[in-house]
Image (cartoon, rainbow, N blue to C red; front, side, top):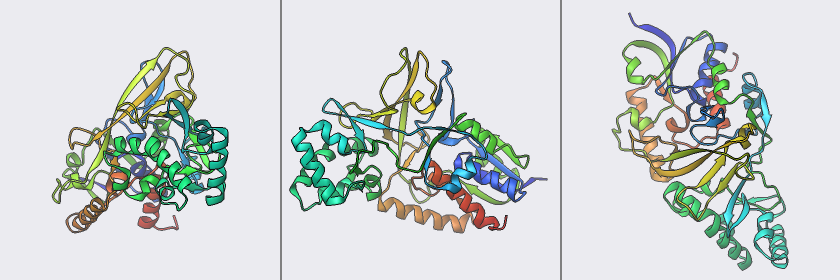
Length: 377
């Protein structure tokens, strides 16, 4: 006789773990939570390396949100340490804040030119505004267009081309809107009201999320391994929908990443958490983990990121490529899923084929729970 669960959840990242916790603790549902990896946390997984440094195995994950609901919920499972992420890019052999701001203008241009450009931007857009670079390139003012072209060529074009394998114009405007030009001196990478890191790391947060007695956790386990051995009422699958259906309608394209880690015999390697390399080098950025974790010592661990094409079965799909044709194919897959697997809901970055920040993944999971169980619980 097959063992029965009220819910099967595939994927123990934020979407899956949060949904499992809510179903188990608030709705008293028996949940089987599985993940093909040997660890919790999905891409947010962190652990200690051989030097005792906490590091993010799948690249830097910086938590930030404007959602008090998400903060209140996650605070049930972690304490926090303050951290505001800062990024600089190497432009003309100088370190320039990213997003590009008025400080960058003052570093790159003479005092007279910088003052003129600052006044032009403030008068045109207003102090404190965030302006997409492609909008600036369409300005009626030649001075703004010239500045926008400079920023575009030296900051956006090279980095975006390396990251996505495509020019910015070939991507959804949401991509360029993620890193605007700041008409201010704010040098923080994010402007969210809540910017902190889990005090003991993400993995410890996930361990607490999934510790409820109603949750059965099975790592190093594929959906195919359990689907025929159990019965379940409902399922949420956070993996790629095209892979689930053996690419029946074709491949949804993703970008992947390669991470090279190194521990250096120095107390600090760079002045901020991340340094971008928009035009030089094959990699896009270097992140120093101690900035994120607060774990400073006589040595420091860094990670270098190399974007690459995703090859199913060989690399990890990280970023859905935001283009209209891809979104249309994903919609066709969801229609196909509604017919072929009506008791399975696809969710999360891969299932929804959408770029989610961590707080968005948490918020989406909470919304799924409310929709599935009802707001009264």
